Amino acid sequence: VSDPFVCTHNSSHLCQNFEYDELADVKTWNRANAASYADTYEQYGNTAWRYYNGDDCTNFVSQSLYAGGLYMVGTGEPAQYQDDSQWWEDPVYLPIADSWTLSWTVAANNYNHWTRYENSGPNVYSYYGDGRGTQVSNTQHFQVADLVYYSWNGDGKINHMSIVTAFGASLDNSGLSGPLVDSHTNPEYHVYFTLAAENPNWMTTLISVVHINDDRGF
Amino acid sequence: MTVTLLQIMRKTRYLGAVLLLVTCFGACGSTQVTTVRKSDVPILSIAPITNAPSFNGSPSDLQALEQQVANAAYLKEKAFVPAPTLAPNSTHLASNAATDGSTSLSASATSMLAPVFTGSEETTEVAAVKQFAASLADSPSLWPLDGGIDWIKFSTAVLNGTMATLTGDVQTWSKFAPIHADGSLGTVSRPTAIEDFTATETQVSGVWLVNSYQWTFAPGSGP
Image 1 (spheres, each protein chain N blue to C red):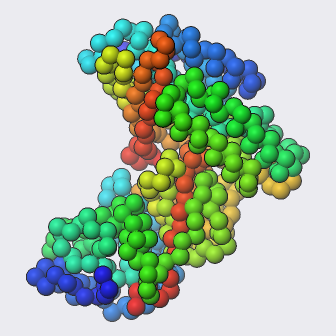
Image 2: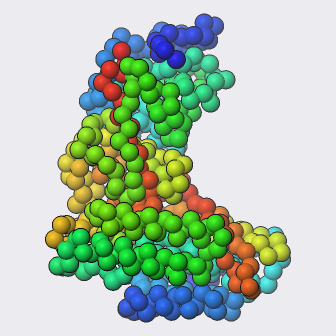
Image 3: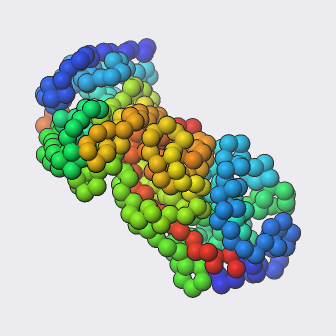
């Protein structure tokens, strides 16, 4: 997918979705806007979009990235929902279809999208590495809107994701300080990015971080 | 019928608890549901299966199977706690603590886990503890203080020869604190979550051992 603004499926109603996209005029990827969106909708969600009851973490982050200026990628063809090279969902405010890609809604597919299909050219991502517990390297390079992925068993199968929204003291009274994230489904607001204080299996959790470069979105 | 069976080691020193735990695993399971733990939460409850039409074994078999899964869930938390534990007012330098903790974890991993797990699951569990021990030695930032389970509830059990599969949910917990360079500990956290599990067991020399333990956070639980 070389140009995320071009709908390659001319007959699809979802192509019209992209045309009517309320954010279609936004041309700048602004990570602060993504973080701001996450902060705004962390608690109750945004009714303009679907809410995946009990499993909303990736949808929440995808919405945040979209609000930050990233454009949907792909054909909008419902039958291609498993194609991780695509990343889109039709918002509820356009009640035309009821479809989305797994990369928009499932953490493992989202990770696959950014690390496999958006890892070259102007959309290059930076991968900080991974680690157990708190052992993520180079945390000093974290920026807001970075994506944090969690594998609870440490087996590499990604189970959860969150988005970096601030820096400082974690608001969960854990005494931890550093990059802070917001996440769904259980609403978490400005908590330490490892989620250690919320996770009794923090000892085995494998954490990966993806940074989307500033030129992504143009 | 929901039965809560308690055998609690109250105010028992950690080492003693471990020794009794390991001793008990091989002999206690088939006669009575027992639970051994050093406990901040003094009660561990086991809610056994009340109706298991697919289970064609004896009640004592079922008890033994359930007990071993409870042991597995418990050790999946407890095995990550170095011994001896650090006191909140510890003056043990972080680097020393990390070395000692890492060494003790690595040394105890197999002896703690082998009485409960077998096969690839034992390999996985031991490797997880040793990997964590290595990370602890490399760069300690959080220090495990304790861990265990508050309760476990079984939903189904199926016995097929010398293989059994049990499902249910369990509430696990961990206690940790940030460790500072001088070895002192920061704020103590105690995360807890409910997990859905599917465990399979196989009989080895007459003892049921867990050869697979899969879990996910229960809906609405976990981070």
